[in-house]
Length: 188
Image (cartoon, rainbow, N blue to C red):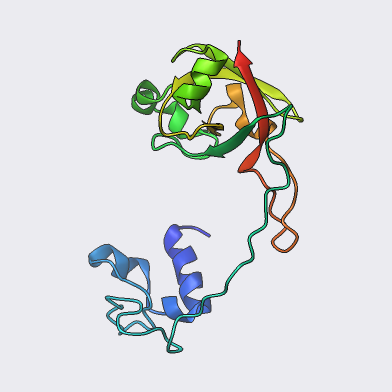
């Protein structure tokens, strides 16, 4: 491809709901899909009054516990996620001086009761360990985390949260269970 416009042209040629979406049209005023052909004005609402097949289709999913839950040796539930200021592993956002000033390092969010039991103060280093490894980062004592739950973002390679997570696979989707595992923690 020589330009993003060429990529958009290929998408339009292969995907009926993007059939009329070309860069020159997008640059003028923007378009909302479906936009079926070059003369179509776009669609203000995808499903204004009803779904294309009538009613929406919902499927109940049976609850399945995580492969690894807290126990005596690893009493905390560890979960990972994102923070507003960084994206994925931070390869781009961590190069931004402004974003790094707002959120410069990995933090372990811990409930005040858990912090008190571990004798950890806000800003002190805490070691978090799972059956797969251990990392250290500063504690952020906060009510945002429930008692027994530790949270970390996965944006910082210096404290790579995913070193701790469980690679157990979902039997259907084959997606690793990176969002939850059992850990222990102590003041570092």
